[in-house]
Length: 375
Image (cartoon, rainbow, N blue to C red; front, top):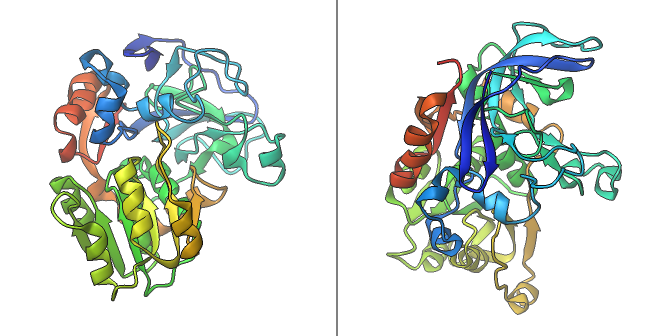
């Protein structure tokens, strides 16, 4: 079968690999649609990372690859024992072909979204139920060798396959994973429907957070984004105000829009110092900044302001158990309507030219490019 595999920095290939075999407690799925290229760093980071043309195919994963835990292992992963090359793709949907012995609740023909994160269930974080913070965290599509969404077939433990209702098509099912990241981030804080939420950075996750905020009934959502096209996306997907920080004083505008009080919660989704500064300064007293972005360099934070204004800073990483199901329920009920996030669909064979390069050369035009595995 075909598989798009990461062999090393700047080296991604469409390989022919053996088709996986379904075992006990597992399901085998034929893959239909995969959301790709969602880990692009903000434009400001590209110079820092010194990415040249030969590195362009890596940009989907470069933010995670260079920052935080090594999710794409060059040595055997402590949880999976596998190493490069690895099949890419961690946001995807597919149709169940086969179920192994002991599997209940799923059958051939069912359509599923796949939860990609893997945890050891034994580390201190897992022992208190924080599986998303597992000390040996791994991901299908990063650290699972042959398993990844950019392939014709995949075998996963049945707990990773979440049933999609008939009302949710496979292309929308492929969006459940990034929306679950946003759902988790919004769930990490307390918001009242009349509160103002500030979203700094309207990339794919920032836009997903805007949608989740709207779905949860928040009626005042301010997005701060330098890209004109992404500001348009933010407005279309639920933001009530959008600000260009290159043209206006974003913090002053946030205060003007909130009666000089500030936002109740700010979501930092840019991963750059200016974004964090805006999120913190745009908060009201005792407001909360939720840091969602991954950072290549440590930012500077003014602790005195945090103390004197009793502000809160919390992190949000991937998702808790139940977040996938909550997102699926919200899509099925119509409170989440993510289809506008899909800005292009391409074939696997076109993944480089119409996928990676399209995002680099016209990144402001796209939110999610879907790779149609079945085409």
